Structures are given as structure tokens and as C-alpha cells.
Image (cartoon, rainbow, N blue to C red; front, side, top):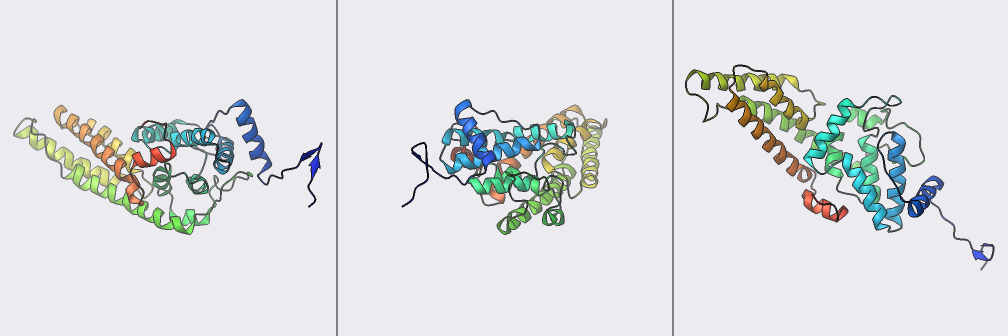
Length: 281
């Protein structure tokens, strides 16, 4: 059998993308530092994650997933930080933070068997209208790059998108109607006129929240905004405001904990242990 040789050594042909293989070799010898300041930063990470997964380079794979999960996070604190950065970061080359479309992250996760980012990715993907998702013509999806994952939503993910979309709408309806609109004054609130004023204040808040959301609203951040709205209502006492803020945070934490189950995934602890065994919750 003919074997290709170079300088007396057998040639092993590699069929990986040249840019990804080059980046992988540099990462092996020089280490790697991931960033998220541009679209290219994501594509760089995508290449490293693909090949480290393919060649069983556990350390590099864990590094890539750890960085990816800082944006597409498994913690509520990480979610809040991501949204805050998205609201404050300037547009870069016509693209807003996080500079990558959830479909690209979703398809990369499927390629590499990475599950810990899926609930967060699907949550943010559900904010996009389905017609836009099917057209796949968003500016973030049309960028040309050899490491770009598929820009099409896989058929198997249509169900997960739909489940998360419906769940997101139900969260906002429940929050505005029940958590806000049906809330009563605190047991520690002054009796009589003040208690009545506080209850009426919650009723007004529920009505405002019901009017404030649209189909592209992210409920977890929107819930935080309700606390700011109530703070501006001078008719509600300090005790009721404090207890409402505490209850909203507990409600958000409960919503976050249940997020994986919406799309049939195990809880966060299992996902983290599977993909990031050395990363504490």
C-alpha cells in the first residue's frame, strides 16, 4: 500500500478546518484566552470547542465551555450580568452584545454535546419571533466565517423553542396578574388606610406590568423592573416595598431553577456536573 511520506515520516491527513486546527495547536502549546468582545471571539471559541471535543482534550473543552457559560449561563446572577452588559455595551460593527445569535450557540452545543448552556440559550432564543428564526436573515446569522455553526433551527429544536416561548408568556401573565395584581398589604403594614393604600398600589402595579410587556420581553429582567416601578409609588409603605422586593427575588430564583425542566433537561446541578465537573455552582 502506498503511503505518503515527508522526510521519512508518514503523512497523517487531517480534515479539520485549517483555521481551527491552527488555533488548536496554538492553544495546546501556548495556552488559550477566550474573550467575548466580538463575533470573531465566538467563532474562535467554537473551533477550539469542536476540536477539543473531537480529540478528547478534556482540559481545553472544559475551558471553552466554562467561558461560553459565562454568557449563556447556568446561574441567575450570570443571567442578570449578561442582560446588564447587553443593555450597556455599545454596538460593535453593527452588532449588539452578545455578538452571536442564540441559534449559533444552540447548534454548536448540539455539535459538541454541551448541555449546560441549552436552557439559557433557548430562553433567549424564545425572545426572537418564530418567523424571524425561520428566515434566518438576522445580521448575526448572516456573518461569513469558516467556523460558523449552522444558522438554521434544527427540526428537533422547534419543539423546545415553542415550549420555552409559551413558558415565557405564561410567566409574564402569571406575574402581572397574580404576583403583582393579587398581592395584598404586608401583615406588618399599618392597619386601616395605609394597608388599603398599599393593596391598591399593588393593583396598580399589576395593571402597569400587564401593559408594559410585549412578545419579545424577557420576564426575568422585567420582573426586576417591577421592583423599580413600585419604589416610585409613594402611596406604598416601606415595609410592603421591602417584602415585595424579597418575594420577587425568590420568585425569580424559583423560575430559574425550573428553566431546564421546561425543555425536558435535568436540573442545573446535573448539567454543571456533566459539562463542568470542576466548576462549583
